[in-house]
View 1 (cartoon, one colour):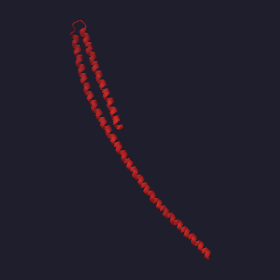
View 2 (view 1 turned 135 degrees about the vertical axis):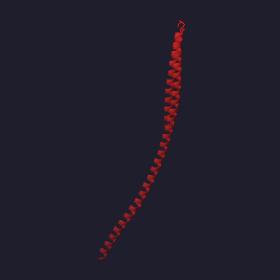
View 3 (view 1 turned 90 degrees about the vertical axis):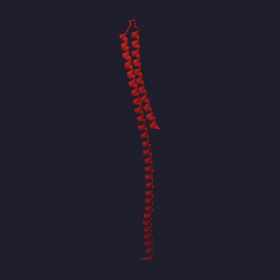
View 4 (view 1 turned 45 degrees about the vertical axis):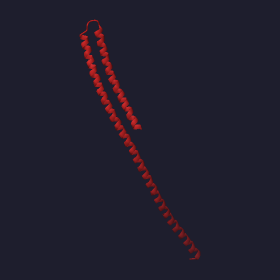
Amino acid sequence: MTYDRALTIGLWAMFWIGFVTGGLAFGSYYSSKAGRVEAQAQERIAAQEKESYEVYAKQQDALMDALAQRDKALASVRALRADAGRLRDQLSARAEADKGNDSGDGGGERLARCEQLLAEGVGLVGEGAELSARVSADKDALAAVLK
């Protein structure tokens, strides 16, 4: 083997050893860098998930509070409506009693009709109050959730 051939083989061997060693070192460096980047991304994702969950939990609590307030408002409206029903029944009973005590001039009949209309008006006011409270409570619930 000649000196030139030995030199060529030695240079090629050094080239391949350097190429393989450099490739392995380069791959190791970038794989560790990729691992760090992936770990940082996982940390950011976990932080965002935690933040999103906290926002969701706050919204859910606000919704539950709003629904509880709505239920309380509807209960008070039901009580008001029951009071209106009792008043309507009393007015209807009075109208019936006044019909029986009619003096013949038609005034008692008109008074009984007025009392009956008043009783119906009281019932309609109760229904209106219930609808108003329900719509208001629903609006407040949605406003609390959207905050």
